[in-house]
Image (cartoon, rainbow, N blue to C red):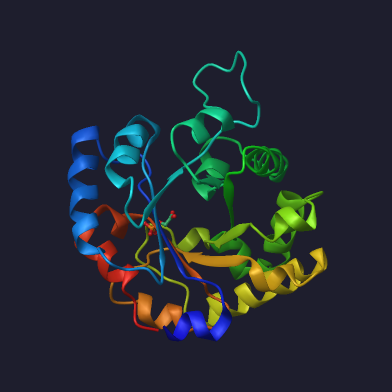
Length: 257
Ligand code: PGA
């Protein structure tokens, strides 16, 4: 595929189901998705269901081209943290990936660059691949601060990572103003930020920035994914709303770019 040849980074299309789908709804969605994306091997396909559906989805995707991720976790391995889930449990549930620091977690649950950093390190401790989310608010973009805001999030969230870990990372750039709003960043706005993030990642040395996948997220839909994926520094998508419909997510996975 053109994308793979272009940059040697296999595109990753990740579905963030957020707080949607009961176990029976999750089952129906995954069955339809399995049919919709059977035989695709040149793209990585990931679903991140709510915790309650993880083990059901794990059993359904076993032996398929669909991988499993969690939407959040604590950084401690275990302990008296009512309502939390540990990296060990996420791994045990069959996850290979975990989303860290989604803007909804930052906005509603007090996540900071420091907790993102702890969780990112904890993910590597369990050989989970963290998908670290960054992105500016509308006010920050309107004030022209977006590059600086994202730089702080990248530096804070990834502080102290070893280069060997860093190169396994996935970053998701999700402008807050584009999430669930139907408003996507233009491909040029997204490319500018992805290029900036890749430049920052080059500080890890050893060409790490060429290995790290940087996903775009925010109102990805079947009708805008092709344009988004044509950008040289965009390696895939973190998809919310459109990942809840098998048909839409399958089309997104099959982007033409
Ligand atoms: P959206 O969500 O695709 O519904 O905008 C993306 C996300 O929050 O990851």
